[in-house]
Image (cartoon, rainbow, N blue to C red; front, side, top):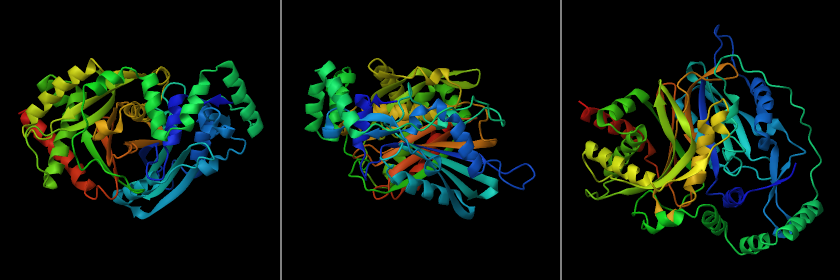
Length: 469
């Protein structure tokens, strides 16, 4: 099967560079010891079998990208005739008993490496050797691969809501013959003949940088963005914006969902507002630790693609779209209550101008939706010009009941969002089973103090909870 990449998919594909890998990461930590302590519930062979059985739910994961000769059209998805699942699913181990810090360092190194563009654009790692009988699964999927509508992230489909994996019909897939360059060229010429307007796209892309292609796609697909850009100036100066290196740092924060609900009820705001207030306070404390000069009017501008929370019956569920908007975070405001008030008013105003990214498929499919939602969030963030914001904050709700991979219970789940151009930090948040998990992905050179920022999240939460007393 041959399908052309959409304009946005093609733009993401061309954005890839050694210093800016554009893949979505997901880290799941599992309780993986068998009840009798004699072995693992999920080993490498079982993970391969599990993923292979779920590939029919994510068929794009067996397809690779092929360029059209002479660049006469957007690239196409083709079935990989040499698809080798053992190339994509890999095994790693920490020197036991492995610490969490060693795991985060390994994730940072894996997140730093671009994907192999000659093969389907994903990798999965089973990481063994963690203390207390735990293992981890780290997944990387290119942003061109996942749109949340016709293509989901693989982490969405490998989890089950019981220890016994659900059964699926046998997969009849067979590796087909790949099209030759001549066949791809002939198909592109036929497409141009049938739709002459696409010739303009070919000429434009040939003379544009990758980022120029993205901006052209933004204008075509998101015309409403013009109003938002016109109303905003460039992002404030910040240590969060610099040229990125090839290496990353990764750290995590664990918080309790009930704390956010307590703050929401006390101040009559949304959980999204509470999350942003916690992040704002953390950024403030981190900037002060760097002796940055702050006044009460100092802001950081965030692009905030969020799936709207529907909070009821102790379940947080996503709406049918991911909304994206710019918001100024009042990091100069010393009073946590005032920070939350500023944010609540700003999100209410931004909500009237936000633009949505549909997610028709994922809201109707059982599974762990946050992985796909984070992928969509990064796509939504990319619709803003890179000089209009300081950082990206993605936030996706997950199920509040236990989930399993191959019989092993998932204890924690952390998103690893990519860094966009000149962005040295990304915040990814996912709620799951009564907790909210932060994944902090950062440039290695610019953010040597990522641990200070992680600790500042807890300090900010304590400030807000103290204001509720």
